[in-house]
Image (cartoon, rainbow, N blue to C red; front, side, top):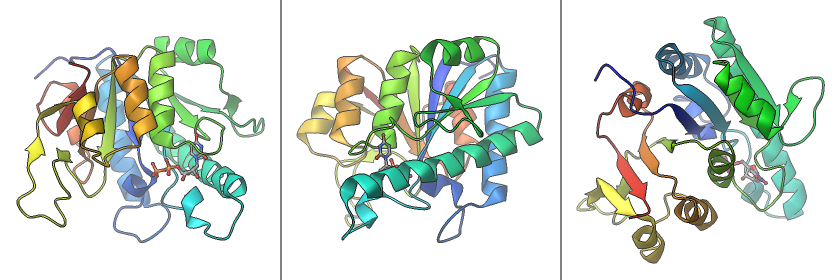
Length: 238
Ligand code: UDP
């Protein structure tokens, strides 16, 4: 387990993954633990792009009476807060980073430009993608799928809070739920398993990008997966 098995990865961190034991917002210690893991990957020569969610602050569907598009833009702004927090933690431990945002905010981040993002990765900088796809009605899981395809990432590491892989039914409701070690996208879609939205899964299926779903309670799972440990569930095309 001394060599990474991937050269370029997309790490998707849900907003929940950044809030630690808090009910809301950010937990600096949790973020620092994740940053240390990212540093391990970078030190091993792995190119890392991070997509952050925003659910620790706001999700579009939280706004029951609100115009959906407005609520989704608020969600995208939440991801920008998380991206800056992640950048700050990484730069605190001397990991060079760039934040690129899908909604232009010149004072705080670069705009998303694919070729520039790839160049940063080649130079060993960690690129953090903020503001999702920049479009309402999407999620940051779909953003991860889209960006992974665009930058030709070999894999998406889907770090989840509260679940350590994909099960045939909800393990919180069914104590006999069975965890899959591997699962084909088409089976996941047919079984309507709610581990990610179907847009993200379809995009990965069509572009043959595997996803590894694993628990983030123990952040060292991130490096374990990249160094070849078989944890969580691997979703793949065939
Ligand atoms: N969002 C959006 N378009 C995108 C990505 C995100 O409208 O391309 C909004 C949407 O409202 C979503 C929120 O941003 O609920 C936060 O993202 P997400 O729910 O994916 O975060 P996570 O669950 O990963 O924390």
